[in-house]
Amino acid sequence: MANKTVAVFGGGLWGAVLAQHVSQAGPMPKVRLWEFFPEAARALAASRRHPHIPGFRLDPAVEVTSDLSRASQGADVLLFALPSAALRASARALAPFLAERRPLIVNASKGVEPNTLKTMGDILAEELPHAAVYTLSGPSFAREVARGMPTKIVLAGPPGHARTLLRLLDGGALRVSLSDDRKGVELGGSLKNVLAIGAGILDGLKAGDNAKAALLVEGIDEMGRLIAAAGGKRETIYGLAGLGDLVLTGTSGESRNRSFGEKLGCGLSPERARAAIPTVVEGCEAAVSALALARRLRVRAPVIAAVHAAVRRGKPASGVLRALGLATP
Picture (cartoon, helix red, strand yellow):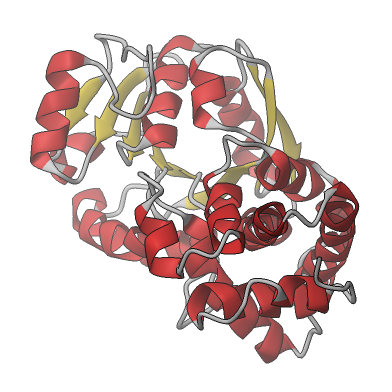
């Protein structure tokens, strides 16, 4: 994809790191990074630093803007790394600037829309119907990718343009494999955030590693049943966007979702726990859509239900242990 233009939407941790990666990997395309808040865009453009990524410096060749028209101008690839709650509105606002153009879309946002229960890729396909949609997911802390630490993730979508995007995204320390199960990859990326909160709750309760292992196993089973019922492939849960991502976010101190859950397990209210995390905790919203999806599809998901009760209804965090059939420590 030499001499092509890539527009990255979302100036958060993952968006900034992906813009930097794409600008340096493979064929060296032209890269623009769109940030919603004009003041944040100006600060990033001037300093090339990101407030939440120590030591990070954005390449001078990456253009930073808060203007949707400018960001999308002539773009061959649109890469979305926005919070799930902002994705539909941003895509809808972008649509008039694309007219009948057919850029390739890479979705790197994780979540399920609460009201419609559509995945992020489905939302993009709905709002930007002329484009082919792919999803990038897997175990990938942005700060580690920024430091050049070896990382492997998955790109899911139809085979038509997959190799083209692979040449764009695969390079350096970030390696990308291919999947044709976009639905399974997207649901895995959202559901694991809910289960990571549950793992953090067990840490806060000091329930031990044995209990956490049980949660990860039970959680993977719930993910598999939900993915299969939604039309994805059950075996996707054993790949990078399922088991791989859950192990990472459910066990690492770097995980915002696990850290949020730990604070709940220590006795903080959901409001106080969320206020203590400086960036977005996607699992809070994902818990709502995950439980709604399980109910719509009539899939038994006791761990997801217990996490939802602790996060959204203020119920005791120890309910996660009871959902596993374990005694409160």
